[in-house]
Length: 478
Length: 88
Image (tube, rainbow over all chains, first blue to last red):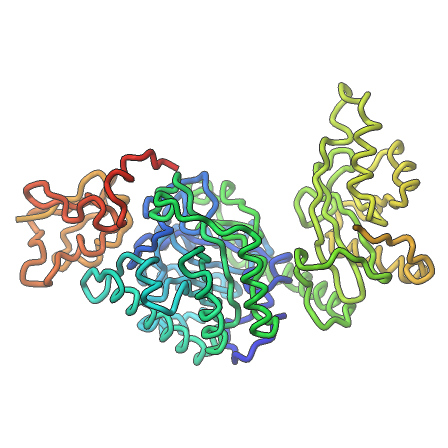
């Protein structure tokens, strides 16, 4: 868990929130309710024509919901996906520019799904006037998008705001927005709400300036700072997209995230952000929205009391598992960030490949897997190191059987640094070549949760003394 | 003396709660202004409220058909940009 100096309010628990905890995002699902259409500012990276189902980016939704529809959707999703932990409102406009719709939704959820963590993501303009109301509904997590604290820079990001019955433009608009954001941030911190600050990295406009933003928001007590890349393509019809504003490269984003992290002592930077749509459903990086369209949800009968009990049971299981894991890891740090990890494997680390279609359980047949998840398990925890795709399935039907030797060879090549291969099933034929390549196939944990299986196998290896006596079994990757 | 909402409207709801005379109706395909109720905010506010928060250029017009937010006035994009194909 990221350390924090913030006192926490009742609804604030980063352990359950996939956006606030690197660890939580592997276990708990979230739901965004598109209940807030209106906005009180214009950003140059946003196009208010929000109805598009083909894009995956913030502010984009397919169906706008009324508060009644939104609450029903949350209850339906909470019944169908028992590891749902968080319900957020992130748009397509600004939640706090739609206070009646927002709070009507939250009122119903507070009554019928009091276990769900509620959160909002706002531009901050209306934040100070809504802080008390947010606290009243136990909104323990608030995200504020803060792209600048300098109004001259703000004038290049925000063409206008609507404030006190007028449209205000230019530097003056940016100045007021910045003041409201900072005031709102301070008020939330004072009340123990966990605040995540999102900043959009806009090359040539706020890239250098974000160091200063980082310093200020962390000094004020923001729990996390999430620097995200600008998304700006002409087909989105945004000002930046049409005006040819460049997007940052992944390297630029990472370099800035790393620089900010080291400036503030490695704490409170978020690196697992997936820039979800404003109506996303499921685990981070996953969108099951198509299963819960207005039409489908309307037809669902929900027993919210039964769903509440089921979620409690599932949550208890996940928490037990996490506690075991924490105990297991004598750990200084939570699951570290895969991409920053140097490509060296310590002798006590076991690298394993997992065949999984759903990302949660070991459910893939070796011959049908299109990709493998590569995990490192060590005394300090486990981490997903890579997802490796293989060129074509080892077993793609009788017509391609002549090719299996080459395909198997390329699968083995893709997994060459792994000591164990976990999958739901594996044929007799590939077994021997895998073993010969030093990869132990294992289908004993079919359909089990990945985390449980990895732990079980790691324990076996430790108990069998294989990690200490045969460190050569764990080879380092180049 | 009344405004009208035209086809560019995206039904974003921003204007509806602001109208001092509750003249705006959440209709489809786009929201509508009840011309009998609309006063263009004369006597209530310095600026017409619906047009001051509307994010879409050309969506609200006056009684002569003139856009209250003409092309380029909100996005900063000059009109030639807007003729580019922009359907995502």
